[in-house]
Amino acid sequence: MTTASRMMSDRPAYQTMPPGPPTAAPGTLTHPAPPPPASVARWDLSRYRLPLGEGFRMRRRAGGGWVLLVLAIVMGWTAGAAGQQVLLSEDFENGAPGWTRTGTPIILWHVANAAECGSITRMAAYNRGPGTCTYNTGGVNTGRMRSPPLLMAGTPPFLVSFDYMRSMDTNPAEQSNTLEIVDTGSPLTFLITNIPTNSPVIRHLANLVVPADWAGRTVRFEFAAGSDTAGNNNLGFFFDNFVVTNSCAGVCPGDFNCDGAVNSQDFFDFLTAFFASAPSADFNHDAAINSQDFFDFLTAFFAGC
Figure 1 (cartoon, helix red, strand yellow):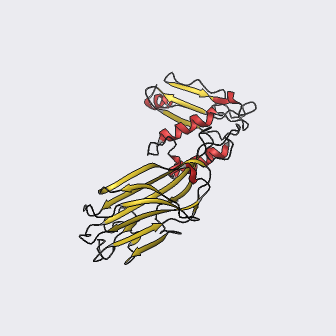
Figure 2: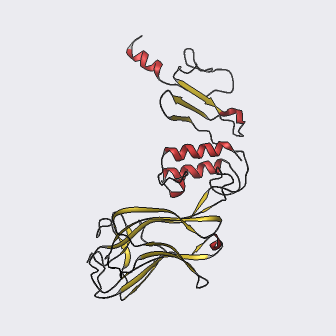
Figure 3: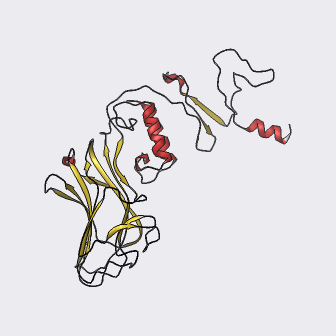
C-alpha cells in the first residue's frame, strides 16, 4: 500500500445514506458505507425517531475528545420553561444607547475609546478623559451611569455580571463604587454590590443575584462613583460587558429560549449565541464560553424533559 493510499484508508469517512437503491456510477462509494476503523466509535441517535428524520451522528477518536461530524436539526420534545434569557447586554462598542449620566459638579461618566486613559476596549468610564486621565475636579464629585429602563421579566433568579477596572484613592473617606437596582415607579432600591478594591486589570464579576421580589418591576441599573476633596489623580473607574439574565426555573435546561418547548429553535438560538460568544452561551456558568458549553447544551437538548 502506498503512503497516499494508507493515508486515505486511515481517514475517517462518512456519507449520506440515499433513500433508494444506489445510483452512483460503477466504482463510486455508495451505501452501505464500510465499517469505521477500530479506533473510531460511532453513535447513531436515529433511535430517537426525530421528526426531521436525520440521525445525529458523532464519533470519538481513541484517546481524543468528541468530534462532531453531522448535526441534524431536530424537533420534538415539549416541556416546561427552562434555560436562560438575556434581558440586557451592553458592551459599549456602539456607544451607550438608552443609558443616562448624571454628575456634580460636572458629568464625568462617558464611553471611553479603546486605550483611552487605560481603557482596554470601549468601556463606560468615570474620569475626565480623554483630555485628562484623572477624576480630579478640584473638590468633591459624584456621578451615576444609569441603564435604560428594563422590565424584570421571566423567572428568578435574576443574575448580573460585568467586567471592571478600578483606580481610585484608597483614603477611607473616598466614596466606593457601587451598583444598585432602582425601581422606576417607586423609591425602592437595592445594593447589588460594593466595589471598594482597586484592580489595575480587568476583573469579572458574575452571578450577582437580584432578589426574586424584583420580578415584574421596571427598573434601572445604576453605577455610582465619586470622590472626596483630596487626591483624585488616579485613572478612575471603568466597567464593560454588562449583562442581566433571568432563569426559566431550571426544569428543562434544553429549552434554551424559554418558550416552553425543546425544539429546533432552541438549537438555532444556542448556536447563534455560541458563535457570537454571547453571555447566554455560557451554558454551564463557568465564566468561559467554549466547547464544553456546546456539549453540555447537546446533552441537555437530547435528554428531553
